[in-house]
Image (cartoon, rainbow, N blue to C red; front, side, top):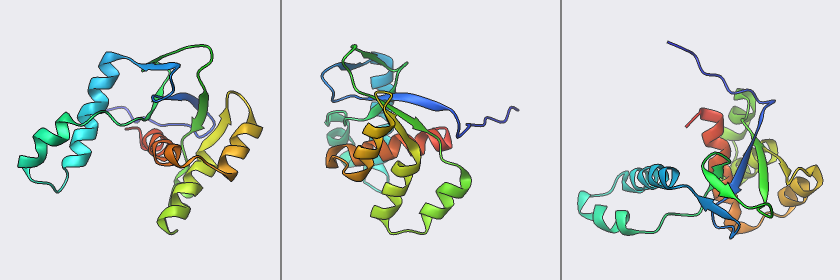
Length: 142
């Protein structure tokens, strides 16, 4: 059995799938849809499954191998959190926990540390939860 580790020094490029310059590949879309359905079905009755499965795929951040991105697509560089960073945030209120993960996990936007700092200072609401999920998924290897 191999132990998989994710270095906090390594950054991964991710793209927001609602960006017009980004297209999610078919296999990635299928896998993300299955994950979305599984997440939304937790604690729900099976009679809800048809409606959950019929819902559109939520916009998300996907890795560069999951998308086709045009040259003008916005690239977010993220890194996995260390165990200490993750645990420190775990004791915070939910909003502060989410922002702590983004503060530690978002390293650059389009290669710019300044753009990432601007984002962290005033993040667009619709990007917060999808970016948080991408950082947590990278941290835990999901």
